[in-house]
Image 1 (cartoon, one colour):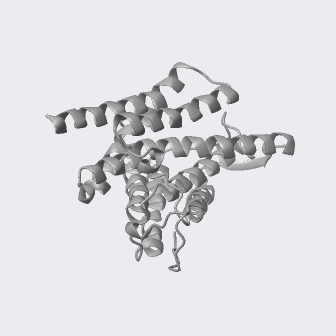
Image 2: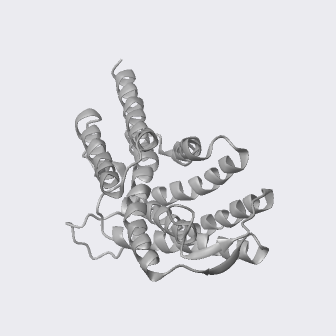
Image 3: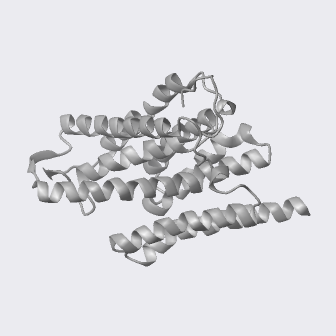
Length: 268
């Protein structure tokens, strides 16, 4: 009976976070400052849920512990996400998916990128905590880590339908990206690298499209089609072998808290 109650609490907690993250922004069109309040509120709700409902230690139980090297994980992830999405746009440009007709004024570019840098960090962290961090805490609690990669990937694929719907190509893209993001959690024991990848890829998206379709460059003759969607999946899939090469010798139990010095260097 106790296990059933615990499972109900975990499921209810996920539904609460999911509705907060996905439904509220669809019901209300926030200006930047209220949006930031909503984003900070998510972490408050997640902390209270972890601490007082699920009986965990707080956000660190969802993979946000500030272990030694967490910032390096975040930076590496950002570079990978920004780079892979940048490569994708270069390939699209070479294929004629769009034309570049000019560049926006600096007065538009700098405020837009500054807003994107902050906003995309929070948006990425919210998604990674809600999907990968939450499911990682659950699998650790229930001794089911062997299923984590599959569980987190399926959860992310289904959750992404909030934004993209149940289109087969979008589901495929989400699955390919999702397994790479989940792999970083398995190998690092935290969600910082996953946040970085999300953050970097979202930043590249804003560089190209901004918040209203207008990014740094003025684009014209935009094209869509199955070929571009397939190329997007193939290039995104390159992320996994890169991560495997970087993290293949890492073990999550090597994480060292910042307040516990050690002579053993850590890659994270």
